[in-house]
Picture 1 (cartoon, rainbow, N blue to C red):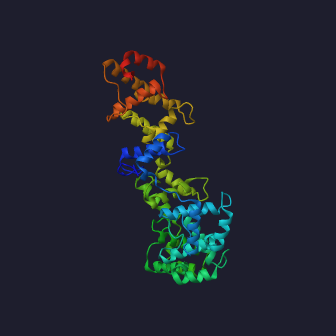
Picture 2 (cartoon, rainbow, N blue to C red; picture 1 turned 45 degrees about the vertical axis):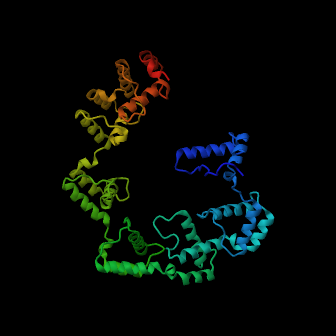
Picture 3 (cartoon, helix red, strand yellow; picture 1 turned 90 degrees about the vertical axis):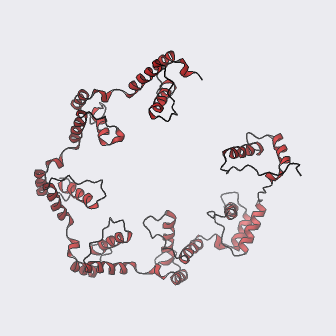
Length: 439
């Protein structure tokens, strides 16, 4: 019994930084296999506060005893994903004791497998998971736009167990599941056919496969599958839906061509691909396919007509970029950077002698208009640092709140001892301001 009053042991999960630090130190000094282990300190602190070291780690014998009791009581197998710490620990222990490829216990493995074969039958485990999902009222596995990989695997098992052609078809399990969740076995195709016919009769627009609504997306894909030659083609349904809504099956390509011609005549901009408007995106795709001679749906007359109306829509992107860069240079604007957009990247390509798109005429022209765009950044920064050093200013702090000073502080570190080390610059700046480099 210690003569000192027991106090709470420092916790490594505490919100107090100092307490966390003390907890780590205590662990390092008292853990036998730690590099900082101190036997004298360990012995002394255990005498002062024995309550800090009373945690008893269950032995394998105790773990096996608990697992056998659990198995005998008819409880479910402990799960390693459980939030209960004790259950999680037992699950890890069970895996270790019954795994043939690890240091398993053959005798324990035989006994527990004989007592609870369902704990080690993957199909039984999967069936229990499916039944639990059904009882909770949740959707069928695999239903959803973004089902995770585990849910998709469970859906594959569901198909195996409930479809007659499945590799693991189980009639009893299927009947049991149908009693709990009959909605999981409804003929979805028949229901969606009725919905499509009702939509067609009501005068609604055709379901869009690019819609964000999952049900509308499914209706669109089903409509395509049932009305086009293929494995799922339904002649009767196709005939009925064509009679109700022939406009749903008009060639959209021709409609978009007419829209493009109207757009061209109105003087509007060329449709963009990066847009939230899906119709505008589709019109641009139609434009590219119908004006590209290598395309299977190339339309000579449409291409010729559109080129006469709007030749600017067919302008070379490189020439357009060069013209925009010259305009930008003449306007006195700041040089575009790679991060600022495509013009910044384009400028780098056209003035780089080692790049395939290098243009010597453009390079000469842009250098003549804006020579300051091409002054080395490092040269300008070094000149600024020399000015500061000569003027007697304080050394720029790379942890400063002021962004300009912060950048200069980092630059000074790079040029004097970092990855961009410059021996000449370092020698000169150290002569001017030796106090900047005193520790």
